[in-house]
Amino acid sequence: IVPLIFELNYVLHLWLGDVVPLDTQLFTALVLVDGLVTCLIPPCNHIMFATGKLKYYQISASIINMLLIPAAWAGLHLGYDAEYVFGLLIIFSIINLASCVYFSNREVHFGIWRYVREVVVPFIFCVVIDALCLFPIYYFLPSSFGRLLLICIASVCVNILLSLFVILKKSER
Image (cartoon, rainbow, N blue to C red; front, side):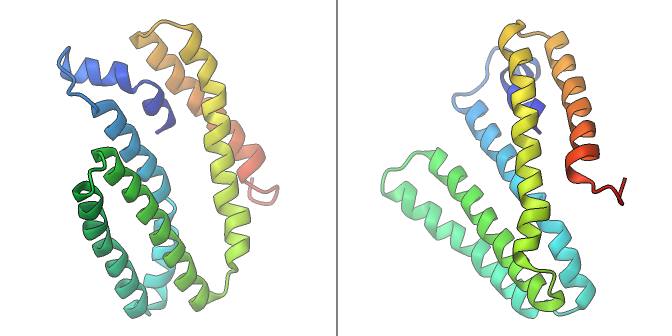
């Protein structure tokens, strides 16, 4: 996702030509950031499905998801821009993640702070380091298919190294 966020302008022009609608790049980037947040939810979902105790978790997730609609409507009604809705989407995804972690921890007692320390912090660290490593390529090379390819390859290499030396413990390698 990080390479795509960097090369979003190029990819959108490649895909849509010279007629890229206003704010498309921003909206797409916000949706991709939301995708980064929501990719942390499935492991907790699997815990809940494995235990079979879904009632309160599903009610919670449904309420959180449904509250996004009136919150978005209220913001738009008050005159906020459309970016506000995408920002809300990210915030509600974080709330959904917190809810999922809470209910998963309640069922299997894996420790919320342990989850944050061993999953969330390394994830954020890897995304930030990936972005910092890709930025010089993005900044110094002209926009082209070659730069897109180089950014993708560099991102894969950085993520492999980060996975081996940051994410995975010695026993997991």
